[in-house]
Amino acid sequence: MKPVSTQSTGGSGNPCAFPAPRSRPALDRLGETDLPGRRIALLSHYAAVDSSFRSAAEVVASSGRLELRCILGPQHGFWGETQDNMIEWSGYLHPVLGVPVHSLYGESREPTSDMLDGADCLLVDLQDVGSRYYTYAYAMAYALRLAARLGMPAVVLDRPNPAGLSIVEGSPQQEGFLSYVGLYPIPARHAMTIGELARLFCAMDGNPPPSVEEAEIDDPAGYPDDMPWVAPSPNMPTPGTALVYPGMCLLEGTNLSEGRGTCRPFEVFGAPWINPERLCGALAGSPFLEGAALRPHRFVPTFGKHAGLLCGGAQIHVTDRSSFRALRAASGILSECFRQGGTAWRQPPYEYVYDRMPIDILTGSPALREAVEAHDDALLLGLASPPSGHPGAEAGALVYERSFVS
Picture (cartoon, helix red, strand yellow):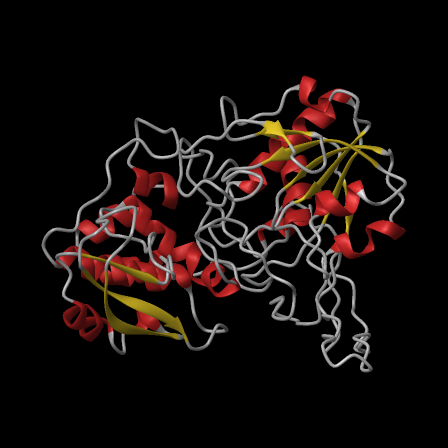
């Protein structure tokens, strides 16, 4: 990461002006970036914004020196209009910019050469959330594979990772458990930026690395607390959601509500049969919840699992993100919920995988499921122990040596 100047440029003469953020996406400097082409195929979405909340598509289209030929959009649609997994969307003509918007979550996950017709540069700007299950990085991977086959230069505009850059959680998937919620064997919480993932994926594919324009961040742990945030998908409303998501997403592999249909998805969870006080009492002071607290909660989802029904459960609150581990917390929550009758594993399909259990697809092996079924909390704590080292470093694929200012 580039070090950031601590000098504010917010314009103190204007009482409504905000100080310039110290964490900034690479999109802020697109006007200074010399791209290897001017006819742009842009893989992006509405949440990839600069510090003035202009989308990457707007910035490219208004640059005066670049020609936006098309937009490629990931899961949930360019505007984030589709709510859940396995809800496909179709391409259309952008109503303002007048360019085709191609779906990479429709009939196919992979772009075609026809989609890039007339372009001479693939530009990627996607807001990732730091978790293996989040599919936007795989839309990028498929696009980078196509660009490599076509001999088209690719540039990734990097962004800070809301889950930070210092904490890795979970083991890579075992053989046979790759899917579109884990196309490459990487940890569940990977501690990499979208640009670092791009370099890593290209290395794994044996393709030339893309050019990566660095983001800027001033926190050594990598948390972009002051960066402008637009929810990259309907159920990722805040950076705090991204912090719990690497663990709480596992509830998608059960019949528990993961909070879809509430204002705090993945932070609020439960089911009609869950006793909130028993759940929170059993986990109070537990090593599973280091760095977090559970608060008893009752809620009625407006859609998704148990829509319209009163659910008992809890809300998870991160109290110390340096010691909090999302996978560890979710493992304890699953263990206790399975001790209360009614909790069960979701059956296939999940993300177009029909022959394996959804929880195994998410975790990358049957190990967690088997430990929960055996009520083996000691094994669960061991499985949730974070690995050492950085996943990108092991592949020699880090984009750059990170440097920060305090």
